[in-house]
Length: 366
Image (cartoon, rainbow, N blue to C red; front, side, top):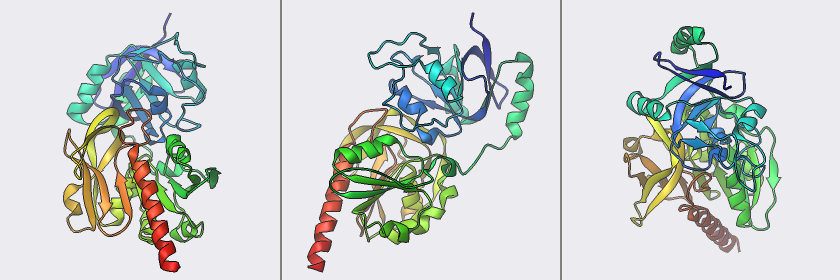
């Protein structure tokens, strides 16, 4: 017989369902993800640090969890909410069930709830604080606590690597600033022959340039970009000296370093079905996204940045490039796990940029 569990929102709404995952209960900001597949990559994405994910697709866990598709070694989310959790997954790569993995990483969850109702509430009211309890008598007190509790901040400091390490390639050398990177960024670079050195988020420009990279990437990551201002001097210290590519949080930090501003979105973009238009070509890509902050379009007016991509659903900024220097960024995830691979070509553009810059430098110094 399934044991009861309750999901409580800060507005007093609660949902009755069944225990899933860990018995060590937690609170967090509740968000929703609209992807139909890729739940393993989603729960292991460090950008969800401290958040509770509601999956809008009704059946989660049907193809199990395997060793190879994690985006980080230790998931850092605070909860999972599903309509139905599969207890008997079927896939030749399956090694564990969703429940088993949530227990392993101490992540609580709930199944058997109306995820459509939760999603509609978030869309109407914006993201809310939420928590779990296994005792119905505690619902009222938990709702009251959620109104006043302060959620953790500066999440990047908890998910960034503490020591540099190398993922070996054979060609160009890329330094990847880890703000909470997805492992598939490294995979995509390695597939293209790049030697990737992953370094902590607070590494200085001088330390980066001492590695003599052919290019520098800023990864995705959790939280408010205004809380990672330590990176702004670093970005300005490398721009123009080496090609630059920023993804998600890296995109936001690139914009902030040039004088733009960010804002918190009502409920963010999280899923694998977001249409983005390339303003340079008119082409529309279906993209994978996960962000709760965006760049204020009006704040770009007096900067050296040009908008290259926009979200077709709401018109928000999805891509930027520097007008004078070899540097660009996108708000979405071209590494594409979970989600479509429409935007993988951006890694190829980065490689082309590095090769052309290297050729130009060689010509100048010849």
